[in-house]
Image 1 (tube, one colour):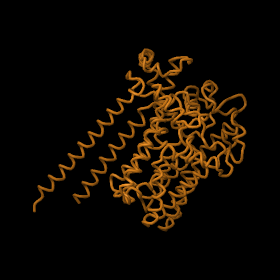
Image 2 (image 1 turned 90 degrees about the horizontal axis):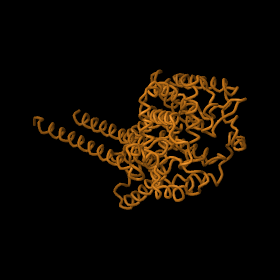
Image 3 (image 1 turned 180 degrees about the horizontal axis):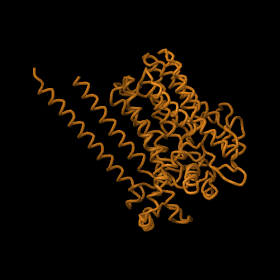
Length: 503
């Protein structure tokens, strides 16, 4: 019993410190200001809170991602992220209306390091822009930073349940969170990471339980429904997880309980259809149907989907443009991981779910006429499946940890992934343009060479260029030191307890 309690305490300490480290890494760099995709969502938030309307007429100038219905403009994005952002900004607005915003703006205006990141041809630091930026940072923290950090904890837990030792489970999380494009989008106001968290949460609960009360299934249904209205393509993953839930319920003779899951998802779908009908005229009519830009792409095939083709398949895997394995070659360890997982013959159903989720999102992205995702770091449409896809790495590391070639090769792959992922994420004040064929060499290295590092907390403190990352390094070193100290203290208590036990 004592050993079990000690192990539980060790696991909880690891999870807490892991969560804090991930939050610091994700939140340190501010979301990009001049990003049409993020602005489209934020415009909707401002319009609802400030004007009580979904119309973004007064904000549309900062985005090209809009839908025009009649004489009015609306966000054409899936509304889930904005739906959460609305109450967050409504609460934040109380603070922003206080006089404290004035001295903040003055400090920013006189901050040379911050001014050096601004476009010299822009309008400078205006009150409305500061308000917009603060709202974007806070909402992003709620809808992307925190969910992705929690996702890391879930990934650690499920890796342990699959038989991985602690260091392997930690490695899996750090690979996913810091060495893949998930790192870039964990601090951006997109919908990918929120959807990824909701989907992986449902997978974790289904994996970790055999008996499901109705209320839990209802909540899982809400999560699945909201994942779809946050990022439409994940409907493919939702179908797979729904079947997984039905299988587990059927195996236990409770298949009728799937109605609770359906009810939860149905309620979210009903609200989403009401939103679509109110704005776009039909329950299944999406904002993309009214987009004024990329009309040909949206009308090609089914909402830009055709059949998988070579240019897209190569582009999202190995190309220097958007290739996942170019940006994160450490994910090549996934491929033997799938084989090792199957051979080990454990959790076969979960294996099938993970494989299906990975394949269906790959085929979706490879079928899109706009597979590159505009201004982007890596194949961002694959982000919702990345935590699932990373999971088999645990089997590779667990089985081959004693092999020297894996240690050397894995270290090289991880180092390259770190350099490219962080290099792209922290370079410049915008995500790389889709006109750049190799964003790492033609964009990241250029901006790093010029000292143009994405705005971050270090910039606010007066650090410029690469030196603005020094505070991040100090905070991470401090957190790791605290972690080691607490772990040693915990170990000392265990030894002391063993000594004091009567023989």
